[in-house]
Picture (cartoon, each protein chain N blue to C red):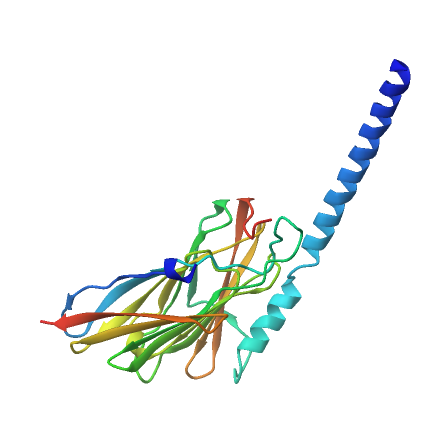
Length: 158
Length: 109
């Protein structure tokens, strides 16, 4: 009787471990099937209409902690070099992430009244991932910056 | 639940003409992502504040379009160039088309 019980428990444990590993594998697989670098590009392309050419590096500064302990609220600052006058201003700032369920994070539509092209917000990051910011100038040119953020505890109620 | 939703502002009350001032805002909102499941395994429907519009003397300053990847109680901060005294108005709208407003006056000394 005891021996049987032991065996059963052992096999039950083994089965449980197997199931757990399976579950973890599924979770990882589904996470990878979330946003990707391609879907980030698609999202950005969908948001940015009427842009002349591809985004160049420069002008944009993306400030965020290198390691975010809590992915539920990661402080991010995006600033763009611009005089913010009627002649030359930042029309929009787009922010996307490649490791969340959806690529979009936030879109800021600015006017010269803002006076300074700098915005701040808190992002939810499900895992370690790359954040991309694209600035659209009023003449249609695009500038971009990106930054990898390591996330210790993911957001999104994961 | 909607009774708990309160916007908070940090806006200077005075500014010099032409000064660029920092504006900070926060609205207490759960920002339900639509990814979470409840105890019964059903997906909790998405309910987020998706837009914040800001005007100064009814002229548009900026619009922020938020996605579920914005943290709960969205804190948003930006700048404003103050050329004249006026009223800064904020409107937040969520997925149910419910909206909240707040305003703050700035005096140019």
